[in-house]
Image (cartoon, rainbow, N blue to C red):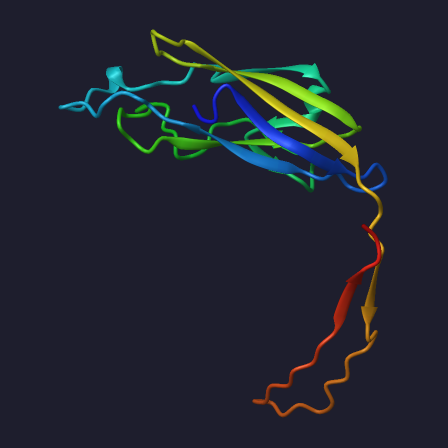
Length: 173
C-alpha cells in the first residue's frame, strides 16, 4: 500500500455556509510478491472478507472520511472496493494492483486524523495500518469581478465563429 504509513492531505479548505468541499487522494494497493510461474488463486493477495477495511477517527468524525466512491450530491460514501479488484481472483503478484479512493469532507476547522486498517490474507501483514491526516481551515468567501458584464457577439452566421473575451478578477486573497 502506498503511500505508507501516512496519507497526508496537508491543508484543506471548507466553507461552513456552503456545500462541503471534498479533498481526494488515492491509496495504491498491490501484491508485492513476484508473479507466480503458474496461476494460483490461493496465492494471490485477497482483502478481508466480508470486511476489507475499517476506519477510526482519532481527530475529527467518521462522517468526514470516505474510503471508496463519494456522491457529492447525496453525500453518500460507497465503501465497496473498486471494480479493478476482483474478490474471487484477488491481486496477483507482480500485477498493477488497484487504487482505493480516499476523501476527506471537512465539516469543521482543525486537525483531521483517521486510522485505516486494510485486512488481507498476507501472513506477514494481515492488518496494514495507514494514518490519514489533514488540517481543515475555513476558506473565505470568494470575491470576484467580471468585466465587461456583457459580451456582444453581434449577428453570427450559421457556420460562422466569433470570438469575445472577458476578464475574471479575484478581489480577495
